[in-house]
Image (cartoon, rainbow, N blue to C red):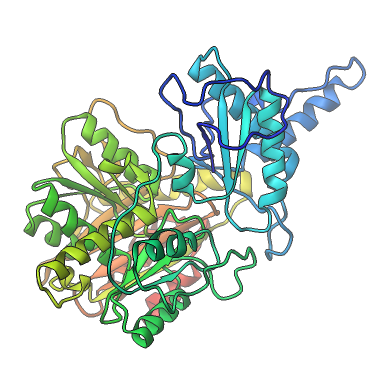
Length: 524
């Protein structure tokens, strides 16, 4: 989590000087450690020049460069930093991180074109690799000529806000359970809610522990949600909150112990936002339900389905606003969500604050209903499954093979080889061909191939959808399906297997065991 920042605590670095004004004189630049790979990757490692070893060094250089390139995942840098994950070796090493950080620092300096020192703040979450990788980042930034500042344990939104605004607070007079999952979110209990008078007795896992001894810090994790629901019941709380490790995602539990995440959380935020901004557009990833689209349109909003990936969803909202389409909420089913009013930042704590404010507003009007009442008419899909197909290829060729399989899927649908299957589109936002292709004047680049097909038949009309998505992080393809009729997912899986995967020969490129098992048994 790195961002250029107004400084708070300087470190000893190799920067050019340590004298600078207390506030930046130019617009701050934000990067959240989503390193730009539009810059030449040859800047990452300087090759050694030698008449005797030049050819050998070129080979070594190419190998090291390829390893570093594979750490890029969309707009992030991701890898394994600590031994222990089965089947994966450590690739996010301090030398690689230092090289990337140096290149990042040089890119920031070049982009800002400032005469004074470029200042970069760095925060981390409690993961046990944080300390060693932070040292590597500081070393790389210093070598680039940046002045680096250690924010220590910090949330991703806090790193962003270090470039923009002082803290702001909200009032509450309610009982709230916070489950921080031993990540960075414990502060929200004692530094925000407690000081504002909320009763947070019974909150869970508030103290950071990079081994995460109780459960995965993830609002989609079933254990996290179960523990939070139990705490809400035991303490008769008005609300339960679940944060992820660095608090850029959240989920909630209402006073009736109902978990609110995925489509439900998007619907809840949409209900709040559309009350404030009538007629606004809501951008989500293309794995959301047909019922969510109806929920949004019934409240006067517009629903733009877009590519999976929180950066894709948020960037689409930025683009729509630039094109004159009022878009106030961008949210992915994973819990990543951003608001226009909050600088398009995915900030789990800010989302929760919006929910708390709405809950207090309801209480002040005399309502005894919990926050869940805002989504009581949201229908849930009758069936919903996710299956995976591993790509049968060497790692360096997996992305190309996966793209080939998904493009073949698109061609089969467009050529009418799958009767009743049609590439989806939303119509209002210049997104067509399975919610992937931007048809406006400035289409966004594609980071991973994916398409969504809506499925219909004469008896039931449109009753479901199938979404194929190439994973950015792993060599596999995710298959998501939803259906509004009994047996719909099973039927769609059989068609996918028999009429596409086997008929096209893609079953030789993809390992389809999960597809085959579900097609035979109807059980995941």
